[in-house]
Image (cartoon, rainbow over all chains, first blue to last red; front, side, top):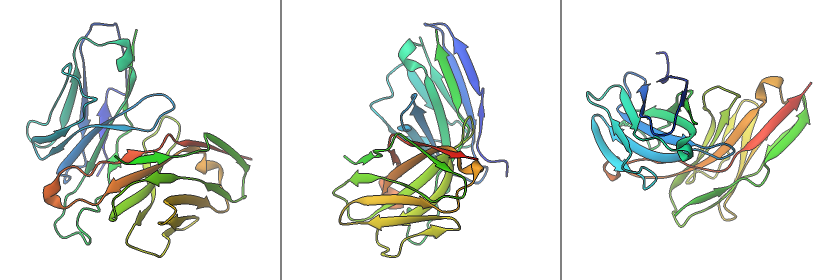
Length: 120
Length: 119
């Protein structure tokens, strides 16, 4: 178990370009989350997958953002036509939903180191 | 909606001292979880300690303990015998208790407290 892996760690791009980030969760984890963290703030929820299904999206996730988890393993987060306001750290987290948890739902999220986006 | 407030943007203590980080939250939920996460510089966020709201006993993990005051909606973190490796951003976070069929177990984070341990 190598934890949650995110690539690239840092991406610098020009406004208007598209960028894609990848997240490899802990292998047995069936839930995957994307969060965004701007400088000096705590992370904010963007979206979440259970296996390959994207079940919830935040209003923060504009139509320029798209996330996929095609086989229920790794996930990608793509930002199209980047804007300077997209500059942030994009964090991925995963957890294991276990119906045997007592109490159910107390799953702990394990975070990756993040992908920092700088839009010039 | 839930909110989490950390009123101390920065704190600094000497190595081996005890330090307490404050956190308050606002919710109408009765069943929930509270967390403290640590984010070292340029490194991933790590869970420090977790508290279930239904438990009256305060959680402890080695040098880390919490003071959970449910009525006051307060959840402070105490670090005893602080070490240089404790230097990091510390985030307090809230999660509603949701069953497996109710969807995402989203964390709501505070703004963070930057803690520096000085030699």
